[in-house]
Image (cartoon, rainbow, N blue to C red):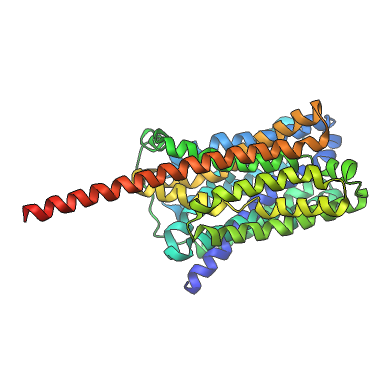
Length: 407
């Protein structure tokens, strides 16, 4: 990699770190927001749900609409809108204005992630794409480990508004870095929204979309309720729960980095077994929760496998679009992050159902079942891919024989 490519990789990592901090810090400030605006904690929690929903719906639509524009001015413009969205959040005095600012920020965040992945795919050496994309994904993990605790501390110290002045400042830093490092020659693809949506006419794309959604959903069935699990099942003292979350985040960084290496070596062939391992690990918490050490070991392994599929799925979507629907390349770049947000919604909803109607620890084996479903879809997708590859080889062989006879 050239020095320019390394600086670009660092900037794209910074961008996802900033986006992740802005998205996730609200979770740590719900109590402060609810008290300041005189609303219930559940109403404040709807800000998180609205962000995820807006992200999932808006990202593919707006990524497709904006794909015709050159990436350099588009990225700078969207970061500018992101900064404005965070400023509006920081000055919001009403729930309505705060909700609107989070919706705007969510859509912009989704499109920027898709563009970051597309830029990396177009500018990096072929053999380095998996590693670079894993580094970009790591920005979100580092945001949860460092950015969110820091933003939460700032919000608790100076008021939750101050936390979003902090994310505004981070956005300005990212804008300046992007101004200096994003290549100016990356052109857009002129295509209608209708043509790009053709990407979803391929059953394998739809099938593949639900692979990361179910995998993340499996983890979030447990992770959404990790705090009460730690306190009520493993009997971790309250003052140490934040430390467990910190350790979880640190381990998940390695998950993302290992996922990059996995993507470079027949990732689609291997993640089928990753999901089966994920199912066993999630279900193991049901047994290991009988002891503190055993439970923490299971939780560490949950963090280790959570992001192993990210880079593989990201490259799969991009490469598929390159081969079959080139005009939908940017749209394809958004699918992994959209699937992750869909998975978060699935997992948190399933976990809520389980904790309401069953024992809290039952989320572990429910999560394992969802991971098995992800493995089933991965096996199906891999089988279809191999079948198509074999058919293409046979067709090429027949074509070669025909050409030989005609010579």
